[in-house]
Length: 87
Image (spheres, rainbow, N blue to C red):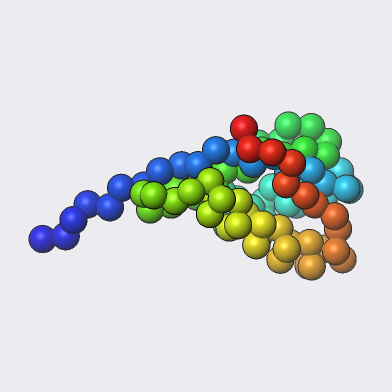
């Protein structure tokens, strides 16, 4: 018999983009990475990492999203993005 695995959502991270024209593209990319994304403005997104196994720290979620941002930024000519805060 398998033990049930419990999952938890983490706090959303606010992501700021240098180029507002790419906000929709970044949102789509992060959704494909199983993140929940909310556009908060032209240059600002709220990103919630996918449900992680119980006991992940918020730091773990930040690292996961940061890795997605590095990949996306490299694909998009090093467009600047940065994590502002957790909500």
